[in-house]
Image (cartoon, rainbow, N blue to C red; front, side):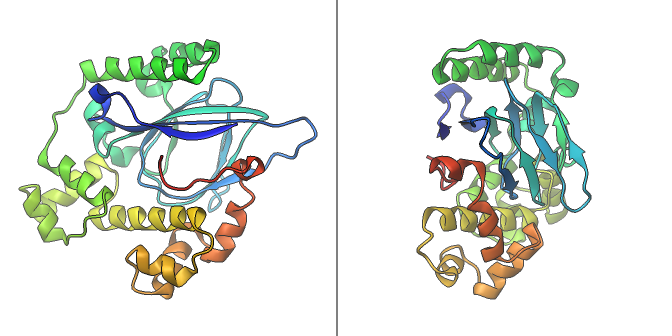
Amino acid sequence: MLLKDFIPSPDVREFVQLFRIVHFQFEKEQPLPFKAYPPRPEQCLAFYPFDTEVVEYPESGLQVKHVPVVLYGQFSQVTNRMIGRNFLVIQVVFQPGALYRLTGIPAHELCNRYMDAEVYFSSQIRFVNEQLAAATNYEQMLEVVTAFIRSLIRTHKKERLLVDDVFLLLLQGNKANLQQLAAQACLSSKQLERKFKERTGVNPKLYERIIRFDKAFRLRNARPDFDWLRIAVECNYHDYQHLAKEYKDFTGLTPTAFHEIENKAPERQFGLIEGYYE
């Protein structure tokens, strides 16, 4: 069983933050737990060579099923993901703004959407998924996906801008107000907001909130011995109440209640956790 993040080859790192492989196999008699998938600062292309997953939006009850290759943008809400017994996903986690640069698709069109990637990449993406199903090890899978990303890079649509560096600064935990971010990107505040929505799908304030929330979520998983006040302080929340409000906004639950669900996630069946990227 595997839940691991892989650093991409140097020639694709400008566009790809990491590759993530998740592989679980459940016996017939084992119950299949769902994963409450919280918002995280990610835009992904996800390949499911074997069993696909059912994604449910708790707020609306909408379900998306049987999509073998998925493209999804920035989420700001929880989705419940029900997996199959032979579950393998290879995720391409793009650098902030990179998906827009590669495809020209405005990121706000993908925000909170779990889409069939074939709509955007044609039947070529189906062939990549078939290659992944035929691969005999994880190294081969990474080679297949890397080759596909290289093909996208060769024909990428948009050039890198200073605002792309601003995304990375926020992702790395740097704090700045809207005016400072705009100055670093050589844009007005309104231009910055427009570029954020174009390339990340959300405005700068929401993007920064999601980054901070994701840090708290992963820290709690990595250090369950830390109390919530310590997690709040280490993740730059004002206090526990501030952290609890963010959990309520993003998950609909208190921190403790959400992590009770997280503790029953599929990976926990195998002693694995979603902590910090490796």
